[in-house]
Amino acid sequence: MLLAGNKLREGSLIRVIDGREVISRADMVALGIGRSTLEGWYRNRAGNGHPEKAGRIGPTDYWYADEWTAWHAAHQRGKIAALTQGDRGGKADDLVDATEAARVMGYKGRNVIHSNRRLGYFPEPDAYGTTSRGRPQPLWRRSTVWAVADGRTGKAGGHKPGTPGAPAKPHPYAGDPRLEEVLGVLRSGGMPSAVALAAQWNVTRRTAERIISSARHRL
Image (tube, rainbow, N blue to C red):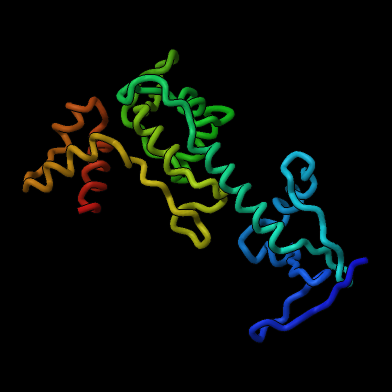
């Protein structure tokens, strides 16, 4: 038999079923989770282990707060672990196209890379090649792709960086030996040259300038 009701704790009204605190979808939405995502999780609970409903109070469905919170934390940890694995095969300095970058990161196809790049979630190319049709082809070092993979948090996107509610953008040059090289020059009092570094690294001058700028911000 379900016993539902309300009680006060530290001046706040909370809802309980069978003496246990419960939360509604509205409470979950208040945590920053979309309603459609919540509905999808519950719909697919047979596969993802989402808790069953604790019961209803009036017209509203509720879940036991401790069960749902524990499940959600484990679910998020699983997402993060899956996202950050990536494929670590190949050499760090290898240049790869969008198709290979998508495969390394576990995406369905190159369009995800291009879309994330437009939104600011993926760095600008380290170099350019030429397609079979003679068009410029953006290329990235594997180390750059790995750095982005390591920076993923599992939080869904939907906002362009710099807009309210946007997730923190992972630094695209984290772990990149080129960044460390420039930091070493700056710390010794030197003035790194974007032209010289672009030639040394076989990248565009603009990419070299971004790495230098990123290094300056980290001093």
